[in-house]
Image (cartoon, rainbow, N blue to C red; front, side, top):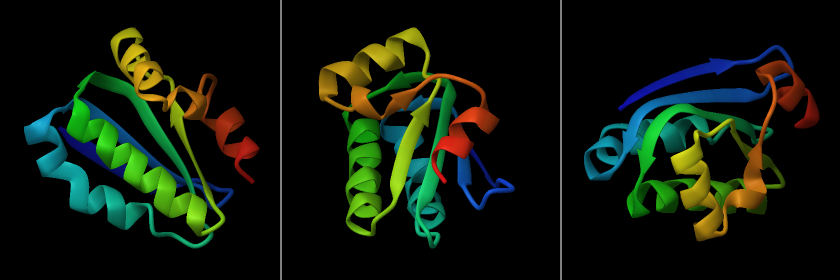
Length: 111
């Protein structure tokens, strides 16, 4: 699992994940993922286009970040997951956080 982080021009944090969010994948990125979600103001775009699989630990990681950011008055969105990941997010109740579009369009909606 790979994690890339950058700050977008409108002060949105973009976290791009590539690989599988299974036990090993979450273990490899979880600490850094949460660190990058701690920006102020907490506006986070998580690019899931490169994630091939998400297990229960990956769903837990995303849910924990969404809850933490929401309590701080921020917002986290999940960008362009593939079909399998999108289906798992829908089943888990996280489908409401999924958005489709370009990085620029979605980050502008977070401001």
